[in-house]
Image (tube, rainbow, N blue to C red):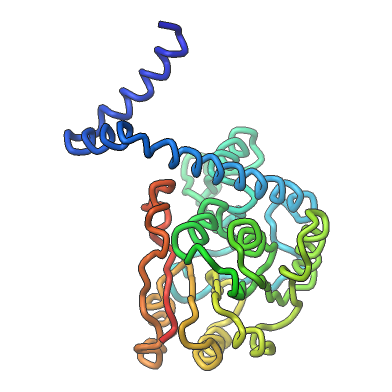
Length: 310
């Protein structure tokens, strides 16, 4: 037996040792049925498409500051909700689309990124920085289009509210067959970055586009969209504007559309003290491609929520 074979068996045995008897039988059945081969091919395809997003991420890094926050953006820490503990001292923005956990660890090792800050200028009294991201990770985006949403989006329009650097748009472009993919972004510099990436990677501009606008001035786009993706907005709008936006969405998002957010709507609306006005507006939907959950650690995506507009 070669050293390589020994290493492979060691890794498998290390994994299997944490499984109980029922789990081992399930794995044995899966392997013996040889259906794992099809699953393996699909996993490889996902990894290949993820590498394309890696290339896009590398291109974006050359266009934006390290923190991936434009100097022209108005980004203010929220005063209510689950991110109200964030401030300029204890919070660091690390864009998950640009830097995954392995890359973050490498940056820390290189001294380019810190995980702690000093509480009172004495070296041992430190606390962990809060890492936030204004983008979703590549894996979370794959989960949206390969697990949560239906497989066939051929006649559907996807809208990303506050598209910033375009992560959702690129994922929709490469991970789905959606016919129209639109990002609406208030910041012109962010729009310029997205337009450059779309051109650099020769994406079909008849299928994907970015619009420089306040979403509340484009009800036409909202009303024509079938899938609306909204990342947490707390850092970009004040409380009153945040409330106005949700009343706007309630009025203009058409019935039967999918709404995806990275925080439960109950939490968002309760924090804004408007939950009762939205009772029965949304129905929680189960994932449409449950067969693909095998490719993901589902617990990592427990903060992604899929709703159908009622």
